[in-house]
Length: 261
Image (cartoon, rainbow, N blue to C red; front, side, top):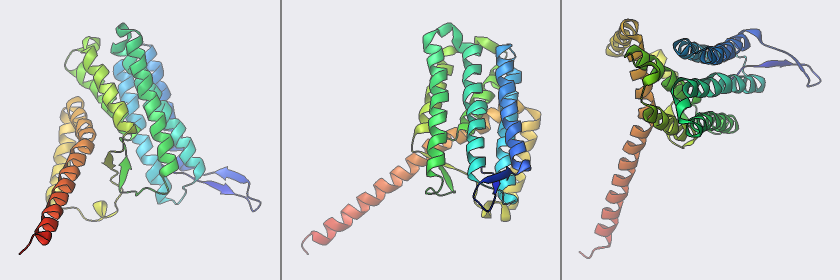
């Protein structure tokens, strides 16, 4: 999510735009608060703080683009905030919540999640100018953190608490880490036409989803996060099958042309 800084005529930065960077600051504030809550053993509060940070992370980019205040400064500041809110905070939360009894295996999984998140952010910054805005390459780190946070909320909603299956959590962190550094494409929902025109049935579906979230927030948010995480590999398999079918059809066409009449 890009913000901007104003530049003097001599090329030196004069200042930064307040509004988008204020939202980024709120992002990192709630990420830090999630860390403090995890250390104090308040894991539900930590998970909610991560989700609030996710909201501010989504807003700062939209505000920066709407006000034409995007810049390199904003990109770097946003990445640092994301690493705290969606890398360190979720990794530490999962370790202190359920992985600590696993010892080295547990904290290494949390570290891997944070490290892959950092790699994902670095790759995003270097490829921002060359990759289409229609999709992300690899699972975005906010989405991975959202999956982690909603898992905590769902487990507490089911009354599991820290007795949640440690192996499942361990596998989840490894899968999310792999998806972040993979080349699997994820929808960015940045296409302008998505918001210019909306089918009536789609609008009704959105309203039903909002009602579901209001009625059962833990379950609804977990299912939404899971759907987005799974959508990348699912679309990848669909594209692979379609490409394989096209190659098979092309091969049959070539063989038909080469065969004697």
